Image (tube, rainbow, N blue to C red):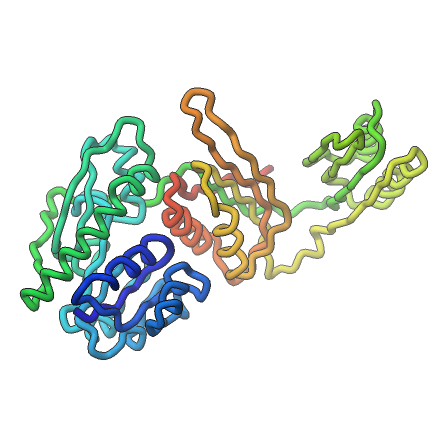
Length: 384
């Protein structure tokens, strides 16, 4: 069977690397969302024709090589166009980590856990109109272990199940020159939308203040923080945020003050006067009034099970969309009961005006699903 694979990341690369070693399976083309995606790298290493999507949500006809028998979708949120499906003799199939029609949508594994389902499963379905609504080609099931997270369920059972089912369906098609198909029972259809819990975006309200970012380094002693606080109070400044620590006997800190515009210069001079007490003080001014109308100020909060690559994946996606990170804070919190580690990110972003907040929410939600963490989006009310 000559196959085209549309996918990304770990699962897409796993499907490609495993199936191309099986007898009777040949890949005519690989379709990936970016040049540095794991699937794209695997395709280049194997010398298989690679198509990088201009629009990560849409697979055009020219992405699929002529002579393709079937299209496989493995870990992709892109819609395979009718033109692309028409290039494959038998059409296309994808893997969805639920017992369709239950949990149709982007967060199927997460909703399996949230609903307390004792049994999970995977489905190979025909790519067609509708959200995971095509005919079923194959299914399998597994028990959900007590206390298991969405990520653990995916890695333990659902990812290996998807690989096995895709292989079975492709070999069936090779033998019968057709894909198996039976309609989904709509009576049991449920939706698995993004979960509103852990990522919050809020547009920042305009302010008549100036931000001062103050860095202080010097020999640690009593009264440093008090000196900063007294000067801030004297000029009506709000102590917005700070990071302070003691390193090898030295005090090191960074403080973000929000000061009325008319007092900004006076507070800056007062802070710099601390140099005479043996501290090294640097003050940087950020005037919110000078922020371009084409830039939106956005707060982001993310919480999920700790894993390698969260910051890398998040910052890569933001950079690809020309989103600047004005500040970012991360921490790992360990549960005293389970011993699990939770990873948290707080970031202040500058978002191009042409990118809507709703669009950004969707992009971040898709990224959260790809990382298999319990994440979704919900708007945070702007501060009064």
